[in-house]
Image 1 (cartoon, rainbow, N blue to C red):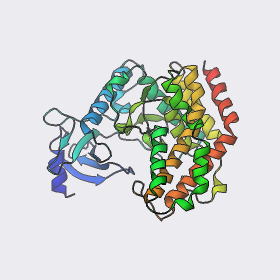
Image 2: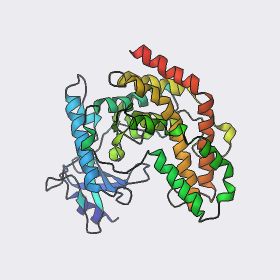
Image 3: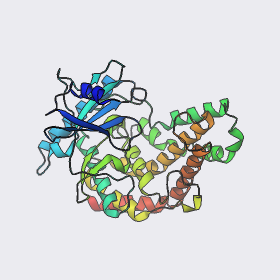
Image 4: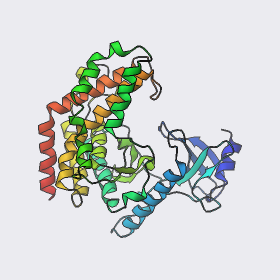
Length: 367
């Protein structure tokens, strides 16, 4: 985009000062984000919303406003909390809205930039893991009393394992790329675990688990930390939707506990970092102890196994479909990713009792 085009968009928001520059910012793969500097030395984040992924932009933005306003009101009543630092707040448009649509049909929004913060793509220390658990736990706790009926699904069936398995079954039946013969072990792995991986969903349907407002994308770089590595703000709220707490827990553990990359080709390198797991559990349960039910705590270990399984199913589906969703570096990349995620599931299954003991003991200590 030209500077003139960006300036025209920014001018439609109530920022302080005039734009000096706008530079691409962050490592996100969905929305396009720019760091905007102004003459008043106040920075902003300008973001183009990917309306191919998020098809209901008005619903998404209404979610964002409801969630940030709720967080702000709750933080105002907590001693020592600072909503201006702990929430990535929206900047209003010049006509008192919160987003605009340009002449090309693109949707834009602006956030206040939080200075002196940082994020990490990988968790390397127990302190970081603890702060990540604390951040996402606090996020859930602050939203525990927000009515789920007010929040729309920005990506329907995002963590619905039945939906993901249905898509896999369709890809198997179609076999459009003639790759089915290469994935027999992976399909067998998936099929052996279909019933047990539906536990969280079935428990929710039976009324044992409550639907709550959750983040749905709890990778560590969605936590901003201060210069002392203390959690300050949870960001990237576009996937905030009703769901089960086990989903957020499992998605965070999927990335934190793995000693190797998500697409590691050498499966022998995939092991479990138990100390990082323990630290995350401590931070998470410290914040959620006052609202989680015993059934929800019991579901956390199921979430830890479910999310890498589900991600593996998604990679395998995309491989069979011809790599249409995830960006790949080679024709076998999605299959490699699926194998790595399924290997992580195996390791988690082997350590299930140990990991669940850590969860239960930490829960009892917090109580």
